[in-house]
Length: 316
Picture 1 (cartoon, rainbow, N blue to C red):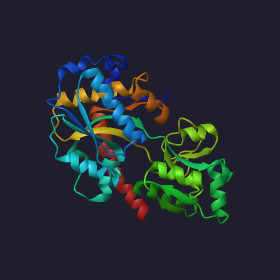
Picture 2: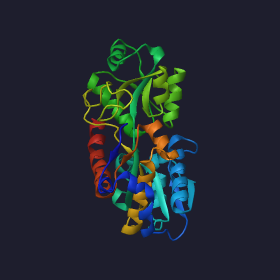
Picture 3: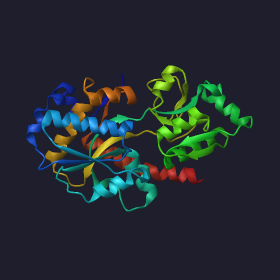
Picture 4: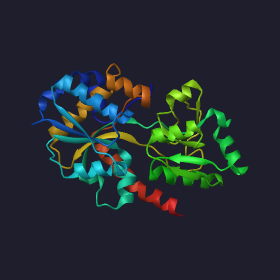
């Protein structure tokens, strides 16, 4: 099972994190409002609510979940930016929100306006088709495109649209890039035959296991857990990838005690595969990927800086 534990948390050990003993060092001064940047009922929303439920049970902290969706997480970021930074308001979004989306929006927000707490899981972003296309490899799809077939390529964010464009450019073909709302809409479109292929971030796992869907490629810099033989973006001639993580953040300037207690608490829950949240993360996302502290701060800053290169490449 793929798992990543980074920063000082690794030295503590997952078992120690899961005990909750460290939570005694900090107590939230009131209920914690949990802003969720995903639609209600989806996998990311369920992940957030299960983590909050586990933290309530372990530590006695009270969470108030609230959906704040739209604009690729930027609505959540705007709501969070000026919220109290005492640990009573945090949010779950994706690192793409604080990287590509902020860089592209020019809305005056940067990762420095936030305190990174902890990632929970990485994307298992695949380039996926349905079995009925007859394509069993990425090369099969490119052969069809070169043969004149109009390849309808589903994407659910501007960053992925740019990656689809660069992927086609690297292969000498032009995809018909179709933007839809959310990964489920991509999967529904592919399954219905309205899309020929699309980016899916783990939601395809059940269909791939059943043989109904095919991971033609990994949209990441690393192979997919489920189909490690599928080529990566670099293998396909693209210098960029859809690497990213689900991430909990707070407003800038959170006290160290609040930041550290929240980060360790979240990391402990998601790394415990016996918990509901940990079990969901294994099933849907291939396992926990925990990044905290200075490593998370550096990751968010790097994603923001590299977004400018992607935007430039996609405009050429």
